[in-house]
Length: 463
Image (tube, rainbow, N blue to C red):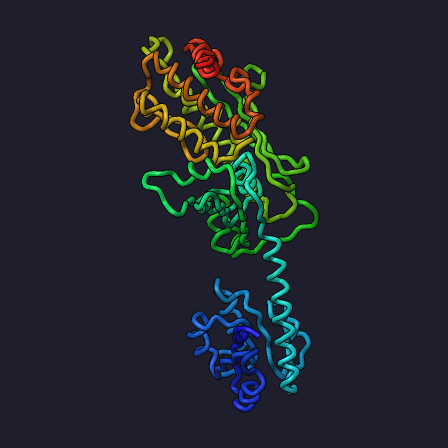
């Protein structure tokens, strides 16, 4: 029959506990009994019971108080719970069941009835656990596109859990929280090797995606990442129908004497989508969109939706300010090439890759190509790649780079787009001028497009 099912029972009635010990015996059961709820609390985490049976009326700490303490424990909160009592009030019984108790046995009762209730509750818990396992586990073979589609899937579906890949005698893993990559590793390890970079190089093997229900601690961490405040006391007021869409944002940014208008709004179509448009002289020159996997339909999602609108609006604003520093009127143009301008060009290209590859692969390809080229062209060390895929000037760095840096950055752009296209063929049709239209005039003046075409032709030419 296997390992006995461990049952913890609390009651101040010695006779009842003695009857239970005779009925709940190995090999099917292992019973551990307590007279005092406080004593039981000191041992529960160590005992790890599979089911708890508890009397309602006990000295020192009653059953409902004990139950509430147990349900606050991350380790014990899912343990099935059966109450015993001589309560006759249907209202009191329903109140306990609504708080999360799994069953209720009225005293007095034949001991075999309790045994039957325990078996039935354990069977039901097993079915739920089996269904949860089937729902939250996905297995298969790594396709010809490698690990990038797997990482993109984990990001798109807001995975909280773990991706594992077995390939050529090595095991790779990546942990996610709400679709954001937290950690990545490989066994056995290689000195100096980047685990995520190695995972992206995998072209065969098997994978397993394990999703975990987001517990309170994980949910709190995710909400803090997107800047959403919890409702006071965790209470959310229910409303009939979908909540109203949160308000949008409208801002103006001055760029070298010109003005850009930035407008961000959310809408259901049918998924909840946040759209930011950048307008110059009444013409839309850039559009950024991000989307959830479903529409906004719960009141408790309203704060998260508003936070997503604010976060995207502020990111675009920050990019405009960082990428185009203002120059005082009448001041002579400085020597060299504007470093933030080149960083912004790479950021625009990376933003296109994000939609096809996902954040983690995009960041890894940017870092990989930069690292490879910087060995011979150290000017690239003046750039850094942020965790969200943005390319920014390294701190500290000069504001201007020598003119020859343009060709180096263009080579980096070609190398990055080449690796992105190798992973996702749809990236091959990317039109660089269109993507960088917002700063096309300045990039043209700096010679970036000519350098890009030359670098691309050099890679394509036969050797």
